[in-house]
Length: 309
Ligand code: FRU
Image 1 (cartoon, rainbow, N blue to C red):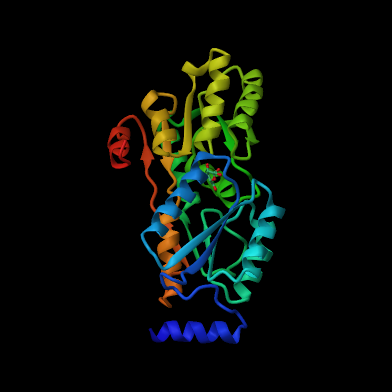
Image 2 (cartoon, rainbow, N blue to C red):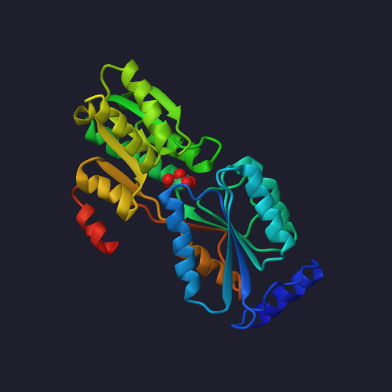
């Protein structure tokens, strides 16, 4: 209670008039700036946020979708600040262009929870997401073992101006260090399935032998699989992705399309719990790291069951 009063006073000093007061009649307003809703994983993140928020009648979440456009997302963040939301959630498309607006929001006294992709620097309240360097490294180690320490890998990278793309790349390189694995083809597929397919078509036309495709997410891994299937080479190649949504990556593993996928939790529920703590004046850590796990034919049934499928 005392910390809530202190928070209120400091916000008043900072000149912020709160949008809500945290009651059923006048709920706190949380602005959620989503970078894109074109991929199933982000649709799931928004659904997780909605479900978690629905359990509390003292908050309301307003959503904006930047449709894969950093300038639009910047405007959305600025609109939430102008609207004087009580808390801002943001899952940034790209690190550099979203850093100034996120910093500006934070500096006006609005608590900011950054989700999944990072901004540059520390000007936010809390980051919620999995450790993408670790995921890349786990994938690298699994792949090295599966290929017996040698072979030809195609790497389909996520948007390299976003932190998960950078980290899944550097983590992977670390994971295969000291092996004889070669990566003669790598491309930025910007997280999108059609790009994964197109880039894989070029890889297939250039390389007579490909042992495995490491894609930074399941949609690109699936796109690559479709390209290999169309050229009659799907059976001689292994496909590895990241995300492991029950109705997407886990199903691909179950169907034998993917050899492995690594769980990348959306963090939607954790973001709402964190926002609530902040709004009540409780302390939160600077970073909340979500767990990951490798999913293969061996454990996919157990994970599908856990997900309620
Ligand atoms: C969805 C997505 C996921 C990926 C995450 C990384 O937009 O591309 O597939 O794991 O973003 O931020």
